[in-house]
Length: 264
Image (cartoon, rainbow, N blue to C red; front, side, top):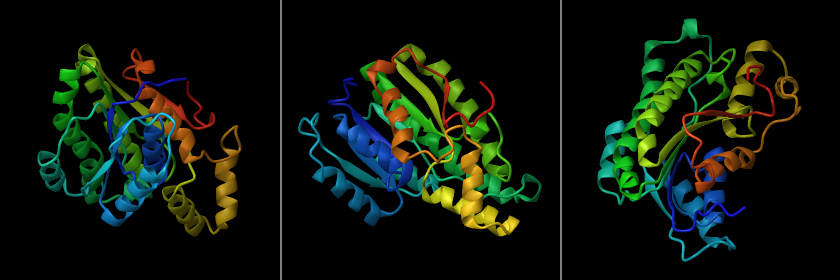
């Protein structure tokens, strides 16, 4: 399938590793000009070099770039955006999740920090990028959240709370922007083979006294697929929603979890 992304410009957040990196590579493979966004410039340079060295069949004089910003500092993000060329058709909002733990024990600062990194920074990005999307009568905003939007996950109290807020923000935004040819959708990854997942497994291992492998296997068994997702499998859904093939898909949550989520 030709997703017709040649000439489209994409900004991918959290793109130095995991799902973000896999998404950036796949968007480039489909012909998009990709700008990476993360806080570690050395890692950004490394991923950019990796993308530029790939020989993609669909590439047409592509231009790839990166921006450096820390999502714990929203004013810094604003400044970076104000000094950048923001002609982006596609925005992939993707940020590492908050630390795990019971919600009752969570400190107020944990909620505030997660709200800043996930919702406030998403909102800053949208407010800066949507004006150009409107001029093109085309825009794609894809938020990488979590299946906890549909089914809260044990031991991830702060994450469950903030992810739900982002999902409702997204749905509201979809209702407001749809008439301009801009869609806003959420991809909800299940357990995916990333550094973030390793942190969660380690945390559970320490709290339960079970080995890393035992905790990992129990998590795999929770999915009908009996395995973790690969970052590329999540990226496939994100890139499809970025394309013209998804013109009439708007305001939805798409679980990519091998069937783990119990609700429809």
